[in-house]
Picture (cartoon, one colour):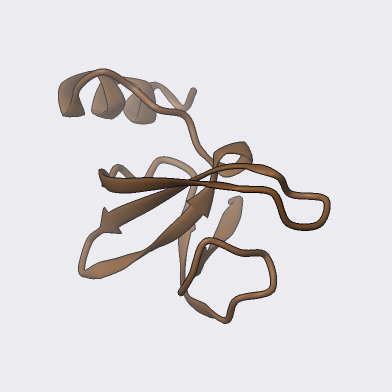
Length: 77
């Protein structure tokens, strides 16, 4: 099972506040572009269960709808 850290702020140096695992489906509530260190790119603020936090774009796949995301999660994609 693969896990990813959910960050408190949109930064690799921020403290983590939880984890998400492959197949978890969340809702994007904000996004931010970062230019710090090696992880430049887009960060997404997500609500995954009861944990709101930030994930780097390299850690997730964005879908057009919750139904589509759940379909991909159930298929293990």
